[in-house]
Image (cartoon, rainbow, N blue to C red; front, side):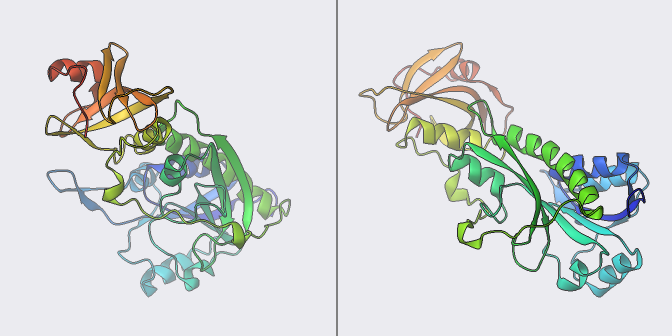
Length: 315
């Protein structure tokens, strides 16, 4: 099939899927037959219907869009089958695909997963790798099968999680890396230049969805753990703490070494650089904070607006 356009039905929903869809649209090796995405959902305080990011991009490029409530509906399966795609390309679609759908593409159903499989299979691989303290993560292009992220791997690419990262920055970087990886993998597989390799199930870990109980900052942890939780939940959903009976979300924190006699959560210093808060071991420099219901602001400005002083406590 070298040189022939590869027909694709793309399945995805959130911002993470956008770079891959853009790459497929812009590359003349691919013929986008249709996009399948989640239905429009109520969003925000006004609960107005919002269209998924993938739908907007597809409509802007005059690509047909399907939005089934349940992708396993026979009508949807039949509609996709009628398009006779070479590939189903799946990036953060949001529903489990049934076997009749996985059997449709002539070449393969291929998924982009945001971890170095078999580690962090499941729903929240980016957040979990970050909060768990991983220093290296990545993305994998994977052949899809009925199991959860268990398919054979086409290719993977690594990236470092740095002390300057937030999960938001990492998310965007992985989306961009993954888009390029997916396009290369689809072309290479169609030309027979890569062979899928099986995952080692013995090394598998599971990245379950985040639970609200995990959002609260435990100041009794080490400075590295506190920094990781703050940055690993920033900007969404945000790691929460309380200051003077107000719920706030620190958005960036740098781990500092050294110990003090202060209890965890106590403000040790306030400068224009930010607020230093004690932890169970070491301390963190918080540089940005988002008060509940308000915009993010510099930590120094936050302290001025609340008359914060050394010795005050986050709980």
